Image (cartoon, rainbow, N blue to C red; front, side, top):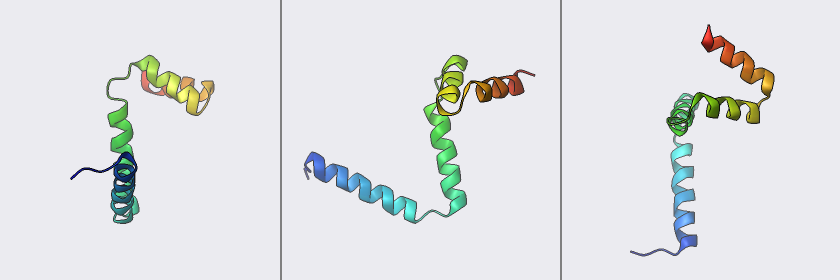
Length: 70
């Protein structure tokens, strides 16, 4: 079976939506947590700090760094 790129994208989208529709809030939270942690598995401390600064701000990055440093 061979799909075009558009068909494959549509299949992936449909499958993703089906998975999400079947999840309750707690399951979705666990999935999001695991996905985020898996994404950062090979990140250095500098990578994580830079990401926090990008998503939030410098002060949040400093505060979070200090929380785990102590």
